[in-house]
Amino acid sequence: MLPIQAKLNNGTLDDALRYLYGDAVEAQKQKYIALTNAFESAFGESDDAVLFSAPGRSEIGGNHTDHQLGRVLAATVTMDTRAVVAPRADNIVRIHSQGYTPLCVSLDHLSPDSTEENASEALVRGIAERLTQTGRSIGGFDAVTASDVPKGSGLSSSAAFSILVSTIFSELYNDGQISPVEQALASKYAENRHFGKPSGLMDQLACAVGGFVMIDFEQPDEPKIEKIECDLSALGYGICIVNCGGNHADLTHEYAAVTKDMRDVAQFFGKTVLREVEEAGFYASLGQLRKVVPDRAILRAMHFFGDNARVPKQAEALKNQDIETFRQLMNDSGRSSFMLLQNVCPTDSSERGLALALALSERMLAGKGAWRVHGGGFAGTILALVPLDLLSAYQAEMERVFGPGCCYRFAVRPVGGIKIGS
Image (cartoon, helix red, strand yellow):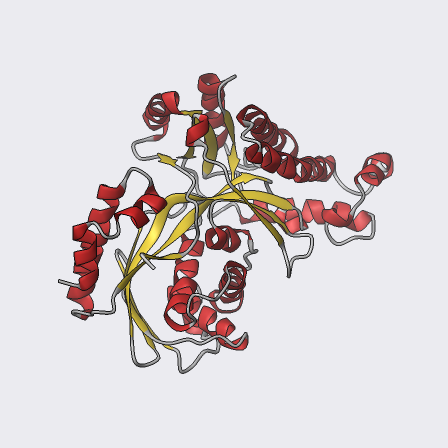
């Protein structure tokens, strides 16, 4: 038996698990015990094995605002990627992720490898390269991981994995001194330069910082981050993500059109992104603007200005424990995404899963909760703020329509990537 498993069995880690998972201590304990068994089967006994966790994240406010250097409100969720990890004496990283082919990466060579594009090996190598560039130490480790963050749910399973890896490097080889922002920047670097995905920074920052967090990207290399303390359950609410199905594979052009429309409006004013455009000047120029860009672009710009201004109001409502104002602002954001941003219904498909889920949510939660598209939109998931006494009924209704397991209930986790029991 691994020493870390003895700590799990005798309750030494119960308080640490309760901090992350609330009342689900026993269920989570069994998951970690199973993971320690898997580690011992894969790599043998190790007195140095420790537990790590990194959460998924949810977008709460600010829809398609980040790529215009706007503001977002995000929150980490209690669904996470977990690991049992032991350091190695060499520069080899071996990771066995349940459900995936084991990976092995040598940190002796950190340049991008084209054969690793779109693979987890690229994330490990890329994070290690970026950390060495900033003067941090790296080293090998063995890990067995498992994840409760559903792929395709909009909860950012890839960012959870990246922050898990950066947290391991921080704790094992840098005395836990690599900041959440530095971890997020290393993860973004890995995704952009090694993995081949032109992602932004919101997902990684949210997963690294933890809890409710408002992020202002006006200065993208030094984003302003404000962590907000709020316990939604104490205010009588929980959060649900509903996976409405739909195929993202054919939606790249839809996402690209949102960015292009917003940038076209910005270019009319001689700017690169909408954050640089004066809102009053935008509205004063609508007549001339309509001669240059389509009305859809104007509507999407209107959404940006509205949602970007809503985010700090949502954050203030959370800080003040003002759930009614927060609920109304979340619904305002949802209506803006549907009516102005227009990222609920694909333009060239009969797919209307998001619209149906939003309509059903309004039918159940009108006057009591909130509902909005989650993430990029057009297909995928919606987000709902649900009174605790309606959670079971809401979940049952969504799963009756969209299928078993489509509705994920979660609480907001207070912390990002972490070594458990440290």
